Each structure stands twice: as C-alpha cells, then as structure tokens.
Image (cartoon, rainbow, N blue to C red; front, side, top):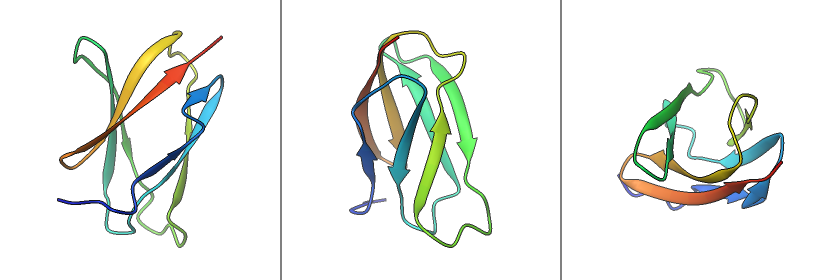
Length: 79
C-alpha cells in the first residue's frame, strides 16, 4: 500500500508525535531498531481529519520506526 499522505511531524520528540495518515488507515505500528514491535495503535474509526496524535509514554529514548502498510518512517525519542 503506497501511503503518499503518511507524514511524521517532529522527527525528534519527547512526549508525543503527530502523524498524518490516509483516512483509510486502520493501524500504525511502532518498532525499535532491532525490529521488535513496541506498540500497535488502532486509528479511531470515526476520525475526520487525517492527523493522529501518538503518546510516547513508556517509550525510552532512542530511534524508532513507524510503519503504515509497506511504508516506514524513522523518528527519534529524546528525554
């Protein structure tokens, strides 16, 4: 699935990130650098805009990857 609308705002974050995704997206996944699934986030079925806010609570500092279908974006968590 090509997701041309998949955009991560603030590629370095402390408490949350904002992700713009196509309205048809049902789930966003976060992986660490070793490929371990850290969190799967179901998008609200009734979201009317295409921006999702994701809390980074419980996620340690480091490099992570957001996956949406076959597309992946890197981001950094700093504390």
